Image (cartoon, rainbow, N blue to C red; front, side):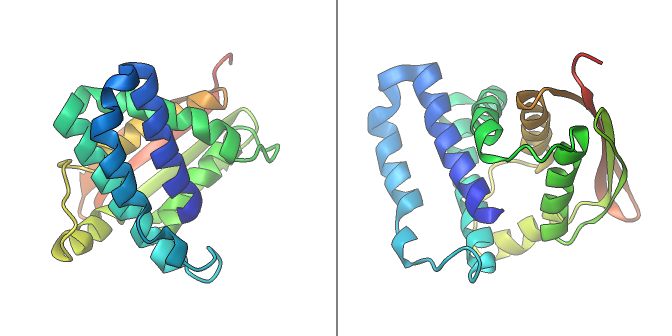
Length: 196
């Protein structure tokens, strides 16, 4: 999952930059791309180095968020998320579970951060995922303490756009509700076929 998300994020970035800004971004983007790819040849296979790929994805995501916000503003996060979703459309296999497939991808990401979550419905036409405690908030703080520079105030600023765009790329609409309580930050997602 982390290797795939790493790939989706950076390839989506290039798609977004080319489609939105054309050749004007080449000079500014290439040094950042080199930074993101540096040392990639030293990573082991994704099956034996899950933690390394997770860390690499997170650092890359943080660097790309900084790039977008610094050069194009928060309003462009949605454009970048849409471009990534077009990559996701082809990298995430269609397992025949419909809305449930989208729910399971979201739940898999939540699980990998050790979030407290449940899939309360996972049918072809409709699915519902509840994150009672989104542990990406915890992971962000640990990463920050290790020197990762975070640009966004909240992971939700990007995640909500990305999750909705990924679902849309597969033909599904989403609604979500963010919440914060004694368990921490969380969200509830409902996913349904767009033409339903």
